[in-house]
Image 1 (cartoon, rainbow, N blue to C red):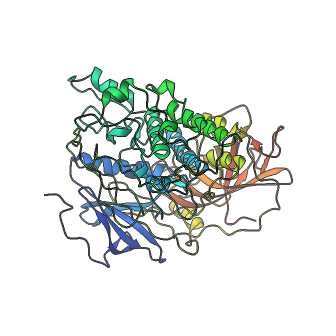
Image 2: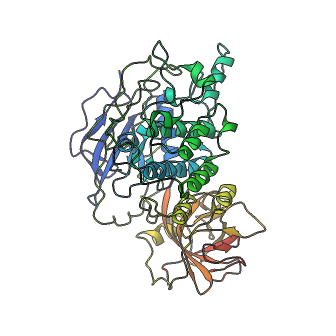
Image 3: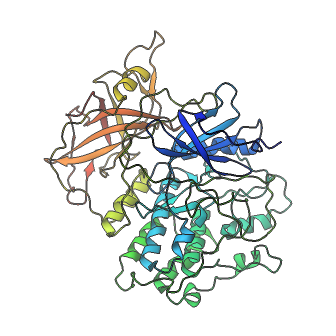
Length: 569
């Protein structure tokens, strides 16, 4: 019996501290409820059944881990997770930040959309993918139905990590191909399938190039209203065309498409990954340079006459029935026998999308709680108390590049930050600031740290030269941060594990860079409120700017320190 073939939970049911207010949508893999937090804010709660040994159960856990590793304005956000009921868990629940807005497909084909707006939305999707790929995560199901356009910010948000893959994770799919939607499958995947047909254990491993090809399909559809290749005579994918034919140039279908935009689109649809772009960062830079060109009329309507949004064909993994009008929080759907794919059919309904208008005021920081014990206990993950504020729709090249690099580290950060940009100029010192609610208690109690204790951290793996940082800084704990006092006679306690990320804000004052870090996120996605100030390696508050710093540049030491404090002065 399908564990979802049961009556919905009654209104008033308490799950992870939130109260169920009703069902937003359901399907063969998950039920989504509208819930209200104790502070009165609405969220979506995705309930995924736990079945011993089930592939979809393993994918549910993978969705949890991936969603909590990824943190960026252009990526969907998970803010909590646990199991329910707590005594004998039957469901894994994921608490999702609500995004109010239509899918990219519905948004993009409206007649008032301009060429510039469409390219901007694709820029934002690629920005999110850059962060995913830098974290060695492949989305594997990039398509319009998994991209929402936030009504508040105007930005695109890539959602639904249910079929994503993190490098090094075990393979869950038993068949040839990983999950995905067939019209967005890259030519190299089809070629692998033909070359290894009938070979026991053969399995295609999707990579970043597959995501970039899918971006090309998305862009092609936004430009033309159709897929790059027509269905085959039998109604399935025309694999021969995908492998050997070039798509019809978009400007022949829609004369409003600029040739410069068309060139990027067709390059993304190249038959091999090498024919596309080296990576998401390189694609972002190419799109940004394109956007800066003055020989393209960016304000021209892309679809002067109203055209209905083209829905995806029913290939690959079935989607959940639509709820509401163009409002969305993505649901993963893995309802088929592993390795199978649906026969072609009519248009598939879009995934269930659960949304609510954002609260009028920023919610207060959540109270401290024990860390999330994955697979064992039900425990909500704290919503970050300090996060990079998403920009409104990009209007200037410099601002767009700065946000593009948000969340990147290492070589990706260096490549991304090499482009011209505008950084915050020197400003007055910020006023004194209290620690986030519960931060001191979490640091000294839960984590065993002491006030005044410090640890060495870094911006990336770069050594021996200055690194380029931005005001929405992310520091890394390289190696376990061990509490400085004996922990119940058992030696040192690991307070924050290796590769924990510290989130905060930087500001420049009187030639030095100062930082306040108010959140720690572990590799497993556990979030702690923190109160840490930035020090140089000599223990002085703030960092000296390296030569070469100036407007648009903050060059600092690659290795720094952070110190536990009970407030920012």
